[in-house]
Image (cartoon, rainbow, N blue to C red; front, top):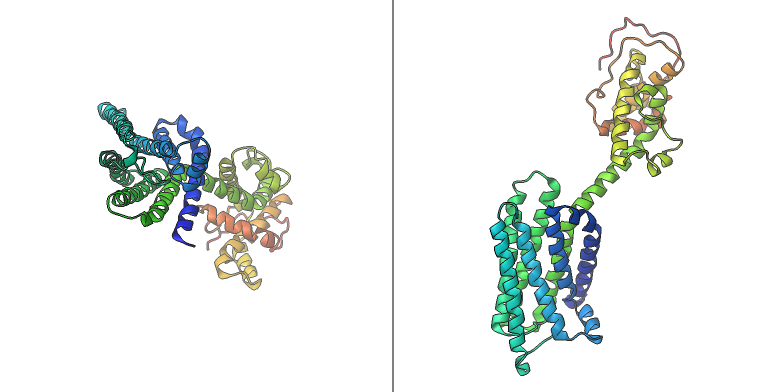
Length: 391
């Protein structure tokens, strides 16, 4: 694949990604003032990058839009994007005067660009316009445009990186650092574009298109960080709910007082029609499973853990899963003892359960189907005076 073809594919990917990110993040971003500025900056950048793609420009010019108008609009929206980035970096509650200054400067730059363009179009013989080229090659016009972008992106790079080192919010850290990387690519693009205009060749344009396309993808990624984090958390909660359900169901049926709500008929129904958000459901199942463990410790027979451990080893359970398998077998025996009416005794603490993690629970749940009936069980009373089990 040639560089122009690759640049075209990356450019298309960046456009799709940026507009997708804008649509997905529109509602939550516009509701929060701190995210609204970032969303508007990415919106302006998406419009500018869209108007930079040869295919889009070609379709516009095949209709009723003049190529010069497209280029000028792209440049003005690009400057607007740089200005919005600066406004996003300025906290309006602490620096109102600076915010007003940036706004005034943005309007002045955009107005000056329009005036310079109008003056230059009075000399059409001196104007050269291409699909990805300038609206006008006049020195003042392009120097002002490029300086505006360089200042905006340089400030964004410094501020984003500095604040990313101060905050402990992981979402904010990733958003700021991705935005900073996008600013670096924007700086590279505008430096290269300046060289192209005043000394380079048109052969640079595909490479510059590739840079600005990657820049667009990274800008979109910076906007999508909260959404990706939420999806990862939802997937984790779904995974915990799904894998823990058989163990949780069996234990809360034996110890119903620990459950806020009885299990639904099937595991699929539990995840497709949860009675609470998945994150809360997973947390609730985890807590209720541990509470059931504490209750069932009164029904653990002395030596049950060691017996279950030996049984698991004879069954060929890998060494890394022996502890979870032994716990599953011990709990299975204790659960059946309670269900048949065996009297409780002195609790026998189970190793690794009191301060266990969700990983411990998932390990036990994995071994639960094969180990729940591994140990024999009867309804004879357990000696209350028997010493507590120690690993």
